[in-house]
Image (tube, rainbow, N blue to C red):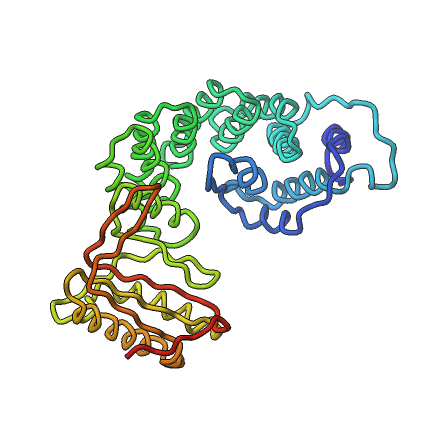
Length: 368
């Protein structure tokens, strides 16, 4: 702290005194890029996750010292009294940038803005400064200036996808759905598996009422990102459109989003469905207290449903050799499965349902 310029040290002492997150300094040094899992979480996930920095030891030391000062050192250094306001106009752009980031993290965007504006003005074309200036404008409720900052960032660093992703989020939040999709398409042209762009593009199509395009977009997302909380939401959107290519299965505390099981005419599992069974087998192997119930429906053909059920159990036992056959119960029905989504009933002529229950639940015994 003593090595910091006097104006910056004095300014940092006036930032609210808070406990530092334990992973803050490693996060700065690791140069973790910002993530945007949702519009609602933009500040939460962005403010404490610095973008890729032009990494020099002196700059990293300044960043760590400034941010840690914000989150815990403050007035505790030497028991000093809060100093009188000190001028910060003489600070260099980097110092103003880190001070602005610190004030943003302290949820004081109005105070952060002058510093980030000064940093961007004194270092024109610095993409990192422009990006965080856009974030500050968003936090301050100034969407037009937010957009200008991201556009300037895109011009300064045309190879980056982050400004286009941010512009997509901003447009989506403003209800300009066609515009949002255009920005997300720019992101996906460079990074076809970018999760946020895939998901929010489908969401924009939902808002536009373009059901067929939306259906394809949700499947594209799930083909790329079948795991995690967003996948559960994407599958729910897809099922709401009457498409059950993917659906959620509850296995104890875990929710798995699985692609619809496919079989050959003899009832054997198709190669494309083995990956779904691998996920189920993994949950079984990692949770010895879980009892799995496999329910198979084949309209007008109970014998085929029975063969498919037995084939699934055989494959699961092959994939998880330590699992006892008694932990996998089977049921089969020669009728379609009826699924209700948002009050609308759907009839699935062929389907498989995986249900995981704790082993303490009454076991009916294995159906053979």
